[in-house]
Image (cartoon, rainbow, N blue to C red; front, side, top):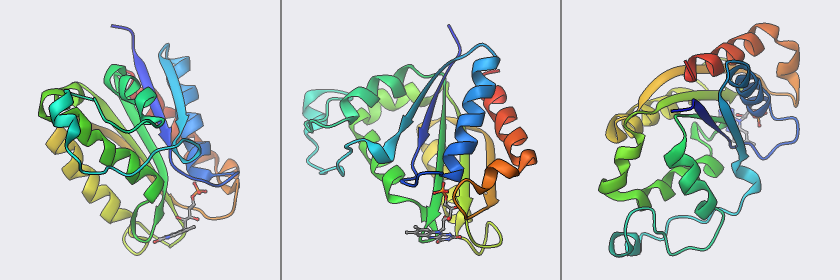
Length: 187
Ligand SMILES: Cc1cc2nc3c(=O)[nH]c(=O)nc-3n(C[C@H](O)[C@H](O)[C@H](O)COP(=O)(O)O)c2cc1C
């Protein structure tokens, strides 16, 4: 099977640092020969899960809502690896990214299996001085539970303090780590 990586960014900002790092990871994965798809969740129409459970009647991945998730479900299923990159908002996963994750509910038990062979990468940015005071640790803990439940493997994480738009472009060490994360996700 061809190596593939789905990169999902969740920041609404122009000059987003988490997106810059994600694009660097995408570059690394492409250079390693993988097919890479990048989606900006914050620019897509992704409604909250309605908890209507119609997906349970209609079959796996069959959400009744007609929004951009319909294009994302097949990308999620087919990707060999998924990278989630977003800022920490209010001490945890930001809303733009969490809406996307909530909608995975539509896969249901039958199709949660599509996560089983996947490698997961995480990139988190935050303004506070470390992963504890920023709340980044809460996002990481949630991801541990989410991906343990789904049977996927968190293969690499990158998290850092950064705040001004585009600021991370000067941080060559972080850019290098992001590129390396991209390579690891497809190796
Ligand atoms: C609504 C909002 C909530 C935030 N909450 C936190 C927070 O809880 N902890 C923190 O350290 N930084 C917080 N920040 C700062 C961002 O996480 C930080 O600027 C991050 O680097 C932005 O990433 P980006 O450049 O990819 O958008 C918040 C910013 C916004 C706009």
